Image (cartoon, rainbow, N blue to C red; front, side):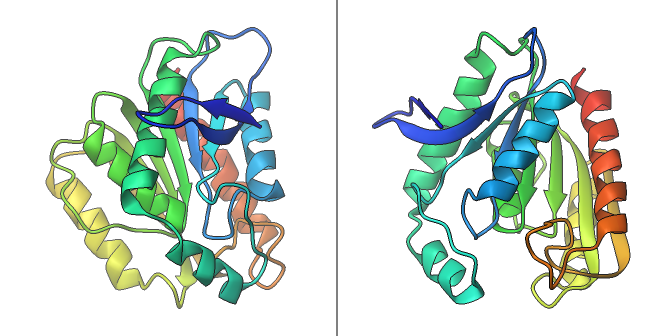
Length: 220
């Protein structure tokens, strides 16, 4: 774990850096469970494939493995604090000695997907690629400059397909590159191996390969 500066007090996060440096940076935004082992390992996988990955700890050390616990943790978030820490994380990635000087990528999961879409809209000159896993956000993307990739579940009680289709239309209406995939017979959290009630190994592998290809295309 590291600490990185914000406009006020430092924030903490998990940083994974590949050997060599001078590579693209990727901001990883955890789901409502918090910054657990899965999301740290996801950062490590990105580093193994040539990216500097930073995952801010938006719950400040707290995690949950249950839905009820995650719901409670989500209620503790303060929007102003989240925005300050996300902006600090973007700035840290852009200024890191290990990253090159190009715009960064953002990968968000569920709750983190919503935050990631917000970063793309609010920091258009800093974000070149956005990957969202089973999460959407209402808002305008007219000022964004990123390309978008989405991974969504067919049977998702938390993220209805009508909301997914609405987001895809909104992004495409602004002229941005957007590719959304819906994975048959999957559920919310299908990518997360520590959610055995939803994890789908074959869909997760396809989503991973698509994510890597997308990030290399738009960040390298």
